[in-house]
Every structure is written in structure tokens, then in C-alpha cells.
Length: 389
Length: 154
Image (cartoon, rainbow over all chains, first blue to last red; front, side, top):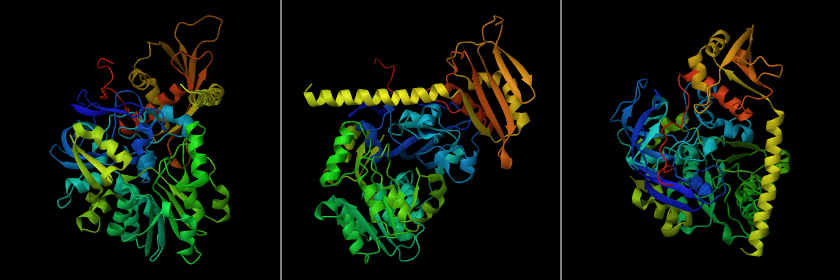
């Protein structure tokens, strides 16, 4: 089959690889209909996250059709149109039982590589670095899905392929980020980053009762989307002296009730702090440019919630004093998609949420290298490039 | 390569060595690994008596290692078979105890020195992780037949 492979830092190619096959009794093979770029891919493409191997098939956000199932698969049958959350859940360990599927205790074949770093390993994910499992990714014609009954969600009528695609990751990640904020009616929520996840977090905050949503970015097209899709107010951080001051003054000196960071380790900023972070990152003295995370902590009102969705490695100069002294709550996770998918299907089916608008560029898999270039450089208003294998 | 590139490369090497030292030191000083398995103690102990279970959780690439199991209550000691020399025998010890709040069984693996070649500390954790997966889900997570472009003329 054809698949998009990581061959080194900023070195991608569509190549021919073996087809996946059923290995374990709870597996399914899914024919990928749609698969999409994700900002977290850029971290290993750019060389900031270690643990990829030459020839890896990557990609973790996808939907498709089941074509084969293992002998222990009971509910999912061939021919079913499904969406699959990016993290793999076994459905039976303590963490899956407690609705924390992305930290599943049994699905990471390379758990021993991650344990020394995090203390306890997360679950596996498709098409990411080897400490996160090393599974084949979704930028391919077919993919093996472990524990199919737990991880394959049948797409209901009334939900299109393009809508279902983003229920694999961008939507549940954004929705979870808003859910973490414990929003009460009328709250003000600030969101850093107007990419796929940030836009879905902003929209979800509205669905969960926020009265105001303020989105911070620097790309005009994305800020336009935030206004049109999410009824958000927007801040172009390159046009203001201080995002913190704008947020403080626009909330009567209180600050946002909750702040969502949907940027992660390759954030951009301005001024001395940006220079400092870029220099240290260049020298490999820190992995992260945590501009948005620091701003979120400092901008949030006292007693508020900072919800962290961006992916980070090792962050320097984290303002812990502000967390303690302002009585902040920090919540974070890789997405627990299996927890949210049933209610997200309903939001989409009833028209309250239309994630298909994220698909700004629709390309065949053979053009996926170009798709990543557009996505990375945000060319032509690219929010997400979608590939059809 | 210009001067700045050389500086960046050197700093990267130094940081890498420091990180390596820290990780290496941590690994060397920690010879036990534990997991909690949500199964009754008797079932977990029985698992380790079955050769097919051991074959499933030890690395498939491991060379054949013949061992003898010595049971002493909730302690299982595996020693290299046929090793009757006065020097210490490579092996490992498993201990089992009930976890609190009905969480199952706590299993601790302690590698005895000299370490069997295949049982570094990360490998010991991998063995316990696979055992837990097999006992709880009926399968071991695997990358067997995982498609990639490796091995295609590279």
C-alpha cells in the first residue's frame, strides 16, 4: 500500500509499504477514507520531539471503513463506517474504566521507553514517536486498529466523512479542553491558538455555556474563522503590546475565568522572551517555546482554570509562583476521545458543531508531502490538509 | 560548518552526555520494577508457572534461557538451569501481594546480579507490562508486522 513516511527531520515521502494485517484477536483492519495533518506532527517533523525512526508511517487522525476483524471482535463488523480516536484504549484497565483512555495501562508496546521519562507510561497512539507506541500511522491506505470494539466508533447517519474525520482528535481534544474549564453560564474563556484544536475548543466553550470567547493568534484567516465559526472576539498578538493587558482590561480588571492553551511547544511570541526561547531551543537547552502557556497562567483570573492542550516536552521558566499565589487550577491531558465521542456525534448531528470547516485543503495521499508543507507554513489559509488515500 | 554550528553541536553533545549520565545512573541504581495487575493473586501466580505465558511476555528475540522456578510462598525465584558454580547465578525474583482497595495483585520483579543478559531494568518493566496486558486483556501489545518503509532497500 502507499503511505506517508517520516525519513528524517523535515524529510517526508510517500512510499510503498506492506499492508497491515490482523495480529491480535481484538484487531480490526480499517481502510482509511480520510486522514489529516495535526500540529503535534510538526514537533517531530521539525526535530523537536525525539523517538521517530526512519521509514515510520505517521498520522493519527482518521476515519474509514472496517474491512476485516479478529476472532475476538464482537460488535464491529466489516463494512462499518468508523472514526477512531488517536489514542488506543484497551477498555478494561483501571484507567479505561475511569474514563481516562489516553493513559491506558496496556496498549503501549514501547512502554519501557516512556516510563523513565514520565514515571508511568501512557497508552499507545497511532503514527507518533516510538515511546508513544511506534504503531503504524493513518497516512496510509489501511491501518490496524487494536481493540476494535473499544476504539472503532460507528459513524451515525447524518454525520459526513469530513465531519467524522475531526472527531478522531481535533474535536475531542478541543471539547475536553473546554470541559476541563468547568464553565458556568456566562464565563469568559480565552483560547491561545486558532488552529483546528483551538477553534474546536472555542466552539466547545460556547456550547458548554461560555458568554464570551476570546481567541489569540496572528494569522488573519484563522482569526476570521474564530469570529465566524465561534462568535469569538479575537486578538492578533502581533498588533498589541501585551496580550495580558488586553485581556485584563477587556474583562474589567478580573481576567478570563479560564484560559485554554492550544498551541504547545512551538509557540511564537514577540520581544525579548521570544528571542530567549528561540536561542535556548536552538541550543537544545529547552525543547519548548512555551509562550502561550506562560501567558495563559499570567492572564488567568485568580481562582481560574488553565487548560493545557498543547503538546510540551521540557518547559523552561514556567511561572509556578503565579499558579500557587493566584490559586489556579491546571488541567491537562492527551485527548480522551472515547469518553466524548457519543456526545460529540450528537452535537454534529444536530448541527451545533460542524468540524468539516477545518478541512481547508483536500488532497490525494500522493500530494501529502506538499500538504504538510502548506500546513506547516500556513500557506493559502491552510488550517488542516486532508488526505484521501 | 560555521563557528555557530560547531558551538550548537558541542552544547548538544554535552547536554546529551549529562542527560545520559542521569538516566544511566537512575537505571543502574534501580533494580526492581513493580506493576499492579487487576487479577487475583492465585491467578497471577499461576501465570508465571506456565511456560507459554513466559514465552509470550519475554522478548521474542531473546535467546533461549533455561530456568528453574523455586517457589517459596509468595516469592518465585527463577535461576539459570544447570548453573551450579560457586559464583552467583543469574536470575530474577518475583514477589506477589494483594493490592489495596481490591485493585488486584502487586507484582515486583527484582533482577539478581549478575543480571541475565536479556533483563535490563527497562526490559524487566517491559516483561511486567506485557504480563499485565496479557492477564487483563488476553493479548500483548505488539509491533509485529507493523508496516513501515524500513527494510525496503534502505
